[in-house]
Image (cartoon, rainbow, N blue to C red; front, side, top):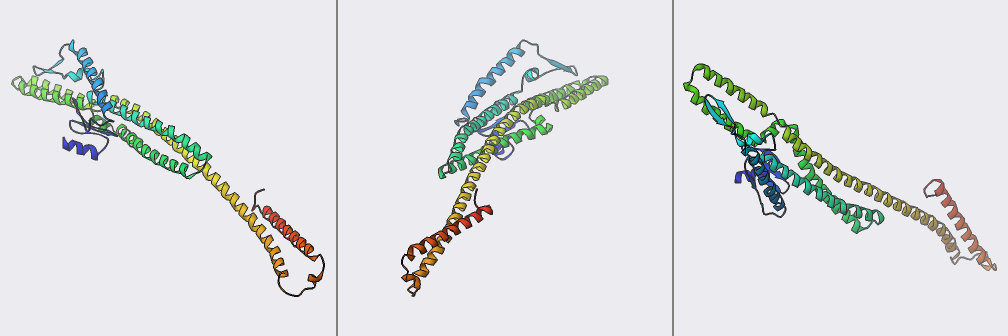
Length: 345
């Protein structure tokens, strides 16, 4: 038991062993055989609904299977003069999924529902926060968006992990064939029965032994071809692969909306930065024009004898002239800046 739990934590999300299937999907960590399920932390709050679903569906399905096969005659295969009972699971293999795939289907359903619910909550919280950021670029809104992007990245990684695991299984028929635990158990039982039948038939004639050998070879050959029949599992995995792909597309859509909002905010900030630069340039031109007038006033402020000091009314004329000169210089430099497109029109 401990060895299997270590395997769950270290290897792929869905992997096959000799007589078990290891499932490590999000909060569901289980060892599935052809007859039973072993769960890690079954009392965990997130795992309890999964356990209840197993209790509701699996006994019901098994009961239906017994009712369907209970009125049928016992199927037997005659080999070497002895009857070999066909396992009960063989009669229902074509009518429904094997036990291990029923468990896998419920696990994938719960994981997909959980991830889809998480994405829905993310969408519900994301769009109002992004709209607030577009209206008001503040530290609070930027912090909310940063937290939102972190949650989105983690959620995308979780969805991508499960999706890639299913895609890997779909690309490898051998791995999918190894997950058919019920079929492998049936084949082992048939093989043991055939061996027993072969030993019992050693007292028969040579022709009968050859017939038994041919029949054994035909059964082994048919089992060999059955090993590559993974259509049921492939259809099951493809359905949940498409669902996970849709969930992943939702996350990518939210991330694209975040990127668009960030681009819009950056454009706003660039526009405000350009306006500040233009204002700074305008103030610099005005400061230069005023500095010229200040220079003239400073020259006349020196205690140096000058004939202009004795002229009546010269003060107003000089102040008006220097102010007009400074203003004209300001307009000239401002027009030059606009001509060079350093300022907006």
